[in-house]
Image (cartoon, rainbow, N blue to C red):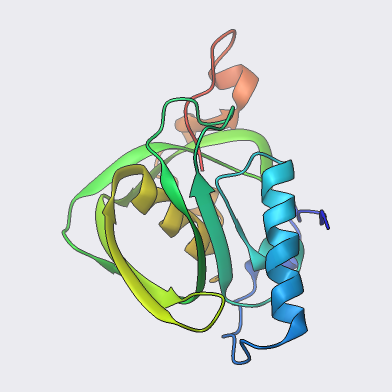
Length: 177
């Protein structure tokens, strides 16, 4: 089922999400199905449970061919529950981001360039990956939602934050998360 995505300003987006404890519940299965349906419907690269009003530490992400991301590397379809992130270097990369909870806007956001993330899949099985570039950016963006952080809170230079049509008049939009 396609769910309503909360927009910046809704206090539920600022709450810290709770850890998932029951991996066999029908509620978790339905949440994941709803998140997938919603993300696909909106051509998103990822979605966090808090964005649809569910305060659990659950994110999904993945990018293949997508009109919102015509030139980005593929990111595998992933369910990540109770995640942990660790920078693999001090190197930070800035790039344009957007968000389904901040529609119609973009911002220039610093993120770790390389990181290791771990967590549990939908069956409760532990996994970890080392990633960089766009994949690393997507994971950080989605996991920020679990701690009540929206990408505008990370922007260092507010002259690089605004509405798409004002920032990029008559141009294709840059890639985003």
